[in-house]
Length: 177
Image (cartoon, rainbow, N blue to C red; front, side, top):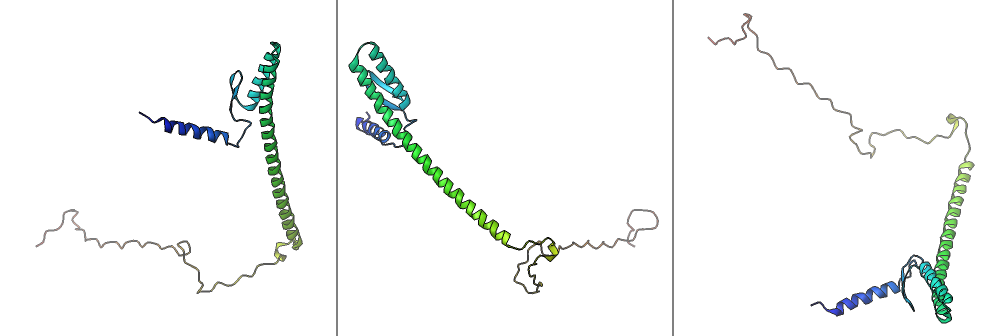
């Protein structure tokens, strides 16, 4: 038999984690226990459902139920507007950071262009300043790589001396005497 205690613990952990999520409230699904039973959905869906229940209560001339449903709808409306304000603030912060990064890149680009434009422009490449080239010395500290070594060519094997062929036309070897 399983212990109910462990099952209750997992249920409590699950509920606590859902309630503490500060994540995306706009798309989060809520279980609202209203006076007419549970209402489940995203905040906008819950608001719409409570507004519909308030209209129904108004048509049935139940002012208390209508006010109750409107208060429930207002609660979720406040949750939704707070979440949207937070999302807008976060978006504005990201946009500000992006603008700062873009401004820094633009400054670096203009500085680079100014440095390049301050160098003399030469139309004839032969007249442009050339880098100093040192003559290669025999004892440099460079490492020999397979590409820098001359390729070895294989020698053809020396032909084996052939035995004299009998003039008689026989292809059989001569018998020893």
